[in-house]
Length: 339
View 1 (cartoon, rainbow, N blue to C red):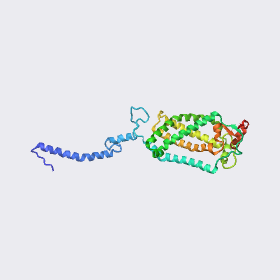
View 2: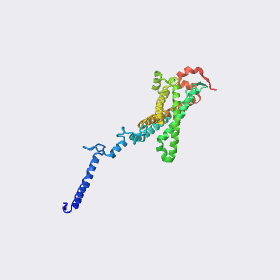
View 3: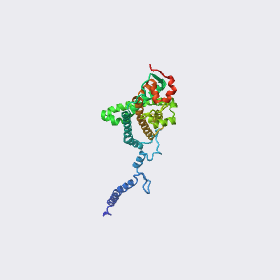
View 4: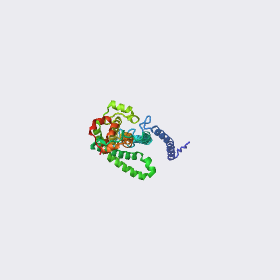
């Protein structure tokens, strides 16, 4: 109990002031803590308009209430401090895209190896003749080789950027990978527009003769292209070649569009938009790489006489009879001497 000395008013007043100060220091901190806990989620405490300043700031930083915020910087996403979708994209890239992409490429390589072991080298029926037929013009071969060479370079540099951290860093270290990655990205970025132009040119040149012919193409597919049985008739391009042409054109188109979005971030793309296009670009590129493994094998080591067709423009007349007999009947009068 406080003893109020009425004889000494100043002492009594000091005791009264000390008593109320004690009550304030004892009761106020728990009450303030309780209010801040109630407002920690950014909502007002009942009966008050108080909002915890830390919660409000963090909500803005985490994009919960950023739509009404303004900034003097006039650019896309300039009012976003932390991009929440970036972590989702990173997790997908590391835990799904890279492992699945690696498995797909390995499966493609194993498939080619098994085909080689089972089917072996496919020889020209009747052997080589002394006659050749012009199959591809200089312009056709130039466009094809431009697309092929640039695709190989872009695929190689793209794979370095996608798998480099997992493969190169353990072998050569971080510093070596940094130089490799910078060089690969420079080549990839500056060569890709040329690849886009070449792919469009190839589509224009070859599209007309790759239009599907249902009766012939379905028959070719049902008989496996004659690879595991008897000869199957085909025109200038068989169903397998047509399928690869349209697949490469469609997937290549997806690669070009998504690549342009990533290469030129000047059309008000948000970071979330570019993350989606990165996923599209990577999946399309890996799909085309897997398909090209089979295409390159079939066009080089699988069948005798095939590689020289795109190399020289001429095919052996017996090769034409074996693989494209309907086309051969149309152009056989243009045979030239092999000598």
